[in-house]
Length: 386
Ligand code: NZQ
Ligand code: ZN
Image 1 (tube, rainbow, N blue to C red):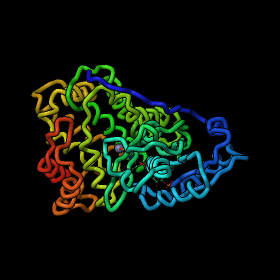
Image 2: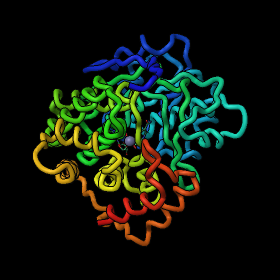
Image 3: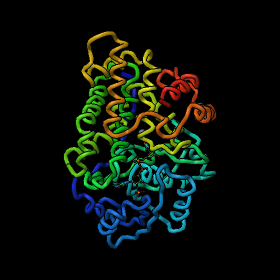
Image 4: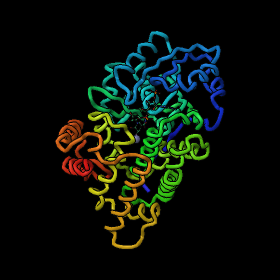
């Protein structure tokens, strides 16, 4: 196992009817900015429940944070924070609202050009102070509720940022708030959770047994309940299990002390930026193809994945790995996700744009070993087209 630091200060408030506890969770004297997306929190009553439980508090609202939140929108919220002297942010929504709120948290206290917040990638933003934030999760997928990362769209690209100061103070995870999600969003959330897990698990073996077995537990749970929670949106048990998997797939636990490979995410972000494909869907499209082109470097872990997740042990290693990749693709398809890029109108000739964007960002040696060059990324994309 590799050396690691593990720090996670987010309090999780999990279960039915927990929104009423908001009043005790938010600091007594806080002036609160509630942030949300387009309409779902109003339509399904979550916002009014939040406001009800914070009755008598000083509250300002900021709605309209779009999926793949835009820098320009978030800077409008930063003005509100400054003008209204806000000192607590409460994000009510999915990954986009939570991530956007992390950006608002940093940018509101940032000295200098706020666009530079997006220049640090997997290095921490040099933020000295942030506005404290918390979340009420309405879409389980990103793990943003228990990590300090965010992704923001700017100038036609998507940019990752983080600071140890943007862990939510607390996150309310009430599975019943997710019952209204369309099937497509649940499928995206399951795919996102699955890929977060494999990008920290299907890498190089380092004898990290707890991390491996925990990752396998998440994957097996998703396979067990994935279709069920899509087909039975109000079944509390399956939804609760999915929600807790989503949080634990990206809160640092399974990634501590192991190599990580964010190839699928980094190429996937470009597919969202260029073609508007949902985040989770981009990952389901790319992962089979990523493994096809990294199977030599990942042979040990792919065989472990094939055995422990899919029960594949008989035959030549090559065949076992191919079968595991097929089963993975098939799992995404059973969730209702079409895993070929051409079904989204993307053609081979569009790949150049993606490769150029990767080059511009310096993403030229991806994966845990750095073996995914731009040439390999191109092959991955060409295969993914269909
Ligand atoms: O805007 P509203 O009307 O609220 O509708 C939203 C939105 O259109 C809807 N929705 C959310 N909760 C709902 C609901 N509809 C009905 N009932 C509910 N309970 O869902 C739509 C999509 O929401 P969004 O927040 O965009 O989805 P998701 O949670 O998948 O977040 C995706 C974003 O997170 C980033 C992605 O890049 C993308 O920008 N990620 C963040 C990560 C992190 N912070 O660690 C890691 C991830 O890998 C990912 O990159
Ligand atoms: Zn993701």
